[in-house]
Length: 61
Image (cartoon, rainbow, N blue to C red; front, side):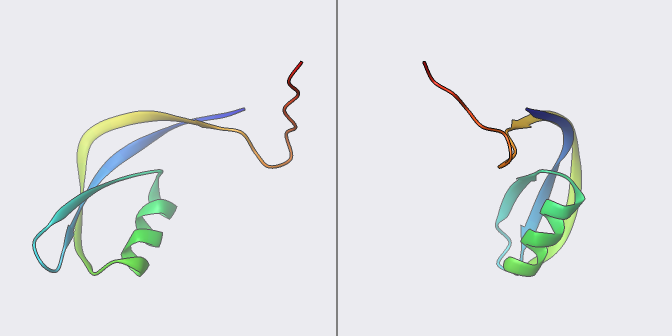
């Protein structure tokens, strides 16, 4: 399992709406290239993200 602490970033879109982005700088860049983002601002919050890599196998008994 991978555990990473990431910053929460508030993205402002062209129409003035806002959305939160979690996952670090790469996630912000992906959103910037996907949505009409005009600004990004760190909220001051951090969250812990956890995930399992594709290489890890899960066995259920």
